[in-house]
View 1: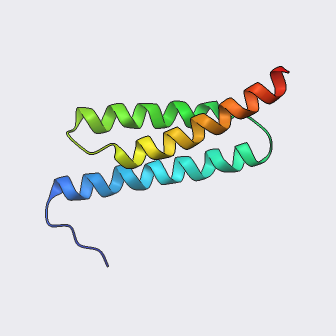
View 2: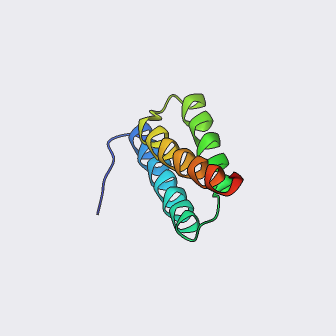
View 3: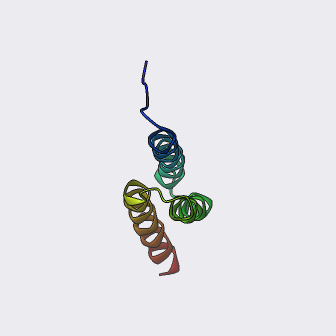
Length: 80
């Protein structure tokens, strides 16, 4: 069982967990050769939520960078 020392620590863990779940789902969409634009949008919104609540967005940004890059690769591949 995990215990958090304060609400901020709990909120940080929760938003990081949500980012991981979104990233995993977006990755499975990308693995099928499709653009995970909704996953990208969700991660962008989570970044906003993190900033608005004084939480670190480092993990969210990392997931977002990966999904954004893979989406761009798919877009470039199919535009040619």
